View 1 (cartoon, helix red, strand yellow):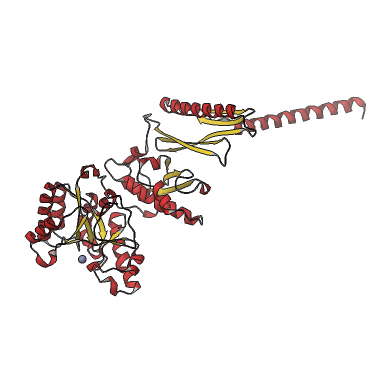
View 2 (tube, rainbow, N blue to C red):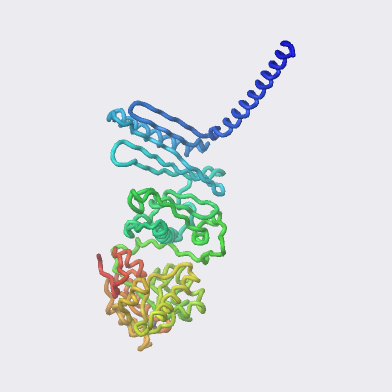
Length: 461
Ligand code: ZN
């Protein structure tokens, strides 16, 4: 081979190598560009200064109101943080990280911001900010906008959240303080500000310290659609998996403001429902009076519509056990059946198990209380209505003995009981009484009940 040929060959190799390098570089650049591509409509900024580091990301949503709110909030946070850093001149730089996550469900965009700032001390400060809006109408949304108006969705979400937070804790092998969880999941909009809907249901975010200690971190729970569809507005309902949908019955939201300054009476009806209950419900509705029904589990399937009406009209449906036996005389297995048999029957038609029980004949002891794990409610005004079957006597007994906080025992099996009670309501209304359920009484009196006690009436705290 002469030197000319060698040079030519070398030139070819160099050229080929060059082409190869170019192709590879191009490909690498192409892929790099693809993966590091900044999301359309996002703002990113990083600052590293002597006294602080900050890393901030936020979306540009094209919704003017939302963008303005986000910008203002971030400006304020930044300003405060930078000023503090400049003033304190910390040895270890302060840190501010603002990041967000987005979710889309139907036309709704959910944006959840988390701001972490470290300005000395033991731990980061953490703030959550959430923005929700409809991309079609551009309207901003709040938690309440997803639920049916006039329905008691807040109590429902509160109960479900509490249950699921405690489940979460036990799954993680932790013990959360029940009172703390109760406060953090209490029925107030404020507790459910951070949430999003998705194809599985409603996820609620409880930031650290909301339902347990800081060390326990953030808690997220998901309520499947089957459990809340009935409270969600139609357009936000989702698919229910494994057919676990709760019955489509909802409780009304009762504004208890009207009871202010009034004496409270809890009228209760045991042993029902019966054919007299419908008339009773019609009249109670006219009189704006609510009562408590301690129903028998074995009557539920015969009176499904009546029990649903009781619930949907704001009365309290509670348990009077399954078949009205004297619980003191029952061995554990039979006792269990009397209690859960009734609770299951009620849950089947209302989607919610009762938490109040009245043992037949008022027979109760600690063994029964701990097995039922419900609140035991007795009475302090006994009308003897089952014996006298006389509406005048029923009426007189109630009117003569009524006191603020009293609990009246009646049975809706008898027309005379229903009639006497309705007349007593009219008379006592004129004497400044309001008629509430056991649960409303407990709320209005500010009492937290103990499952190991029995209650015959309710005084003020
Ligand atoms: Zn009874």
